[in-house]
Image 1 (tube, chains in turn yellow, brown):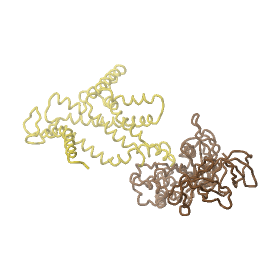
Image 2 (image 1 turned 180 degrees about the horizontal axis):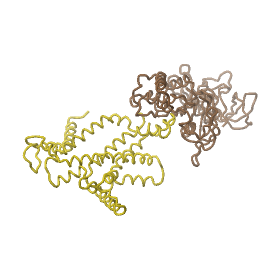
Image 3 (image 1 turned 45 degrees about the vertical axis):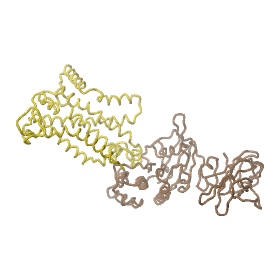
Image 4 (image 1 turned 180 degrees about the vertical axis):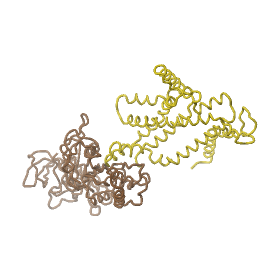
Length: 277
Length: 355
C-alpha cells in the first residue's frame, strides 16, 4: 500500500514531468491563436483568439512539409530494407568481422549530423566534379543522407528484438514443412514486426525532424519542413510559424493514434519476440 | 507413418562425442522414450532424428526411406518443444493449421482437420485465443495438435512437460499417451524424469555419456537393470559388492562379506569375479527375528526410520558396514532406532549387474 506521502510525491513528480514535457507545445499552440495586432513577441495566453494566422501560412511551408513527409517515408522504407537483412544476418552469424560491421551500422549515431551533412555535401561535389551529376538539392541526394541517419534506429531495435527471438519458433516452422523463405515470411518477420514498427517510427521521426544535415542538402525551392521553419524563424518571424507548427503537432498526434490503433499496443506486447509465455 | 531406424549414429563436436555409435529400431506406432541425465546425448539423438543436426557418421531411416542429410522440412516430422514454441502472433487454430497451409491442404480440409484436432485436445472454446491467453497445459496440447495435424512419420517430443507443475504433468502424461494411441503414431520422447518414462513408454532407452546403456520395457528395465548406472537411475536401489562363488543351473551363488547369497540369474562370469548385486528396497523383508528358511538373510541394526505416508523407509546398517534401504508397510512394522533386525529377499528379486 502506498502511504499518503508517497502518493503526494508521486503526484507532484508526475505532474511536474507532464508540465515540463507538454508546456512548450501548449504555449506554441496557444500562441498560434493570437488574434490581435502583429507582434514579434509571442503572446500567451492569446488575446482575442482567432485562426487568422492559419490562413497566412506561406505555401512554401506546405510544399516543404510534403517534401519532408515524402523523404521521411521513403528513407524509412529503404532503411528497413537495409536494416532487416543486416540485423538478421549479423545477429545469427558468427564470423570474425561481425562486431566491426555491427559498429559500422551504428556509426551514424555517433557522428554529429552536421558533420554528416558536410561530408555528404563534399561527396556530392566530388561526384559532380568527376561525373557532372549533381546530387545536392535533389530527392536522391536528400534520401541518401536521410537513409544514412535513419538506418541505425531501425537496425538497433531489430537487433534488440532478434536477440530475444526464440529460435525454436523457426525450428517448429521447419518441422511443419515450411522452408526457409516461408519461415521468414510466416514466422520470423511477423514475430519481429513490433521491432520493425517501433524502429521505423523512430527512423521516420529522426528523418522528419532533421535540420543539421538536411540544411546542407537543400537548394532554393527544395527545402525540407524543419529547415524551412528554421529559415522563417531566422528571417521573418510571425505567428503563422506557430500556426504551421501546431498543424504538425496535431498531425503527429493523429499519426501516433492511428499507428497505435492499427498496430495495437496489445500486438506489441503479445508478440514481444519471445516464446508463448 | 512408419518406424524409425538409427544405424550406428555418431555425432561429434570437435573432440567431444555427443552420441557414440547409437543403433535403434523404433517400431511403427511405438512410444519410445530416451531417458538419461542431462548431457547424456538424448536431445542430440532426437535432433538427429528431426534433421536439425546431421550425424557425423551413420544413417537414419524412416520406414524404408533413407532420410540422412534431408532437411527437417522435408522429413515429415512432428515436433513438440519443451516450452511449446507456439507462434505468438497466431491464434490457437492458426497455430494448428500452420503445417496444413504449408502442405497446401484445401481450405475446407484445413477447417475440418483443425476442428477434429480441437476436439481431440478438448480445446474447442480456445480456438481464437492467442498463445499468451492460454494456460501451460493448454499450450502443451496445442503444440501436440500442431505437430500431428499433418500426420507425421514420427512425433518427436523434447521434454514437453518440463515446464508444468507436478500434478498437471501427471494428467498430461496420460493425455499425451491417449493422443498418441488414438492416432497410432510412432513417438520418440525425451526426458530425464524416470517416472515419466515409466508411465508413458512402450520401451525405454537409457542413455549415458552418448551411449545406450539399456533398451527394454519399463518393467524389464526396472526389474532387470544391466548396469549400476541403470539400476541407480531408475528408482531406488541397493547395490552390494559380491564375489561369484559357484553356479548351479540358473542359480548363481555369491559371496557377500562371508555370507552366502543366491540369485536366480544365469551369468557367464568365472568364479571369483567381483560383481554388483542390485536389490530394490520394496523387495526386501525386514523382521525382528531370523526367519525359518534363512536364505539371503543379513543381520543389521536400524539406523534410520522415516514415515512417509504410504510407506515406511528404513535404513539398516549391516554387519559389513554397508547400509541397506528397505521399504515396508507402515502398519505391520515398527522398528526402533538401534534395534537389531534381519533383512531377507528372494533369489528372483535381485539382479546381478554386469557392468
